[in-house]
Image (cartoon, rainbow, N blue to C red; front, side, top):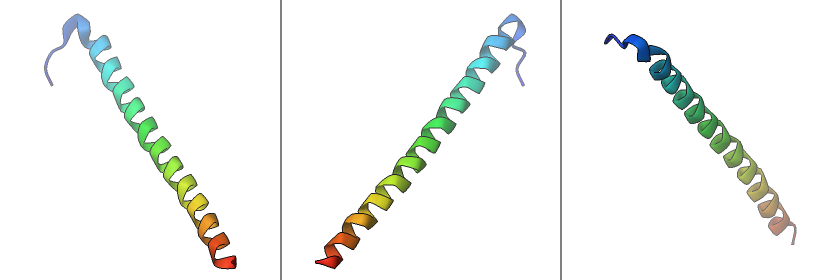
Length: 50
């Protein structure tokens, strides 16, 4: 691990923030994918009723 000196807080904080943002984007993508999958299943079920 390189010595970061007085910038250690800013660098580590930036890494933590980036990791949180990436995790939020992955979570949002998974949530939206599940929502779209449910909506598609509903549309397909209605198509089968006709």
